[in-house]
Image 1 (tube, protein in one colour):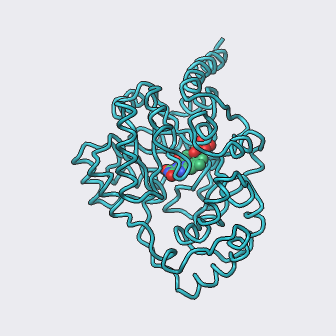
Image 2 (cartoon, protein in one colour):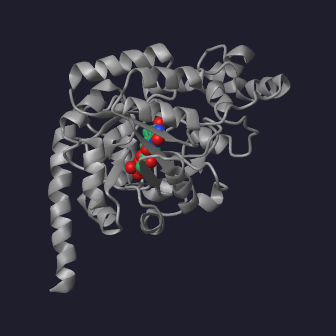
Length: 358
Ligand SMILES: Cc1cc2nc3c(=O)[nH]c(=O)nc-3n(C[C@H](O)[C@H](O)[C@H](O)COP(=O)(O)O)c2cc1C
């Protein structure tokens, strides 16, 4: 059975993955998840190689169980012309002024963290699992990770992307439905065409590829898990549900906002990072709907200085509030209690399915 294969590959007790959440997770959350029998994941996209090394050490100090590291697998992008960067900085000047900061220099926008160095650090750390999104890992890295015995998970938002991942030799595909919070993993299709809901995406990916499929997007409780398994998934990946747990490092106001908002309160935006991502609609998004934006990761560098301050003080108007469409179903409890609840609820949901044949 596919589900057994995935659990075997990842060496986890329960087929649940705490989604990597770059900028919103930390080693404490990851280790708590792995210790609860699921797979904890650290989103390392915004970490320097030294920070990645330290994070892996910190996770290993807190758990002996498998965990995953995650990066965006973007193609190397040409930096935008200096004139465009200057214009973008000028446009954001009122926000820098509001937070009484200088804003980034042109150099800070152009010089991003070296993704090859990030990959090399993760490779050398010989982590149990490496997952990636927003692209395809280069063949040389796929080979290198396979040589170290690291299991690879790639993200797909369309059937074609899932096929490409399987053909490239990736072990497991994470099918990300349109409901998902955070960045869209799309790398082959146009974003608008790749906004496929999980109910449509999961079974079509399952029917097409022969590697195990993880379902992601909008799954918050046992009902969602049972539905994903009924559609053929071998595991679920949950992000928003783990943003509000006790061990999550995000601001308490952000946690409350997730619980208070309906699906209609989230939209897809590029204003914070340049990449399409789902988050709670806020003032900065509304004020910048028509703004000219730089591509990821350059736009991210432009907004980072004031987002950092806004995040710290819980100012929800000027920072990204990534959140899936099911935020209202989130709970504040410990990771361990959440995992126990999910397992019980899944069983109950299966009993409901059994009623079909009674
Ligand atoms: C705050 C946040 C940050 C995210 N960052 C990443 C990331 O760094 N890497 C990644 O592969 N996915 C990232 N995602 C997407 C998740 O992997 C997953 O697709 C999504 O959380 C599933 O939808 P849900 O939030 O409704 O559970 C992020 C999601 C959230 C909510």
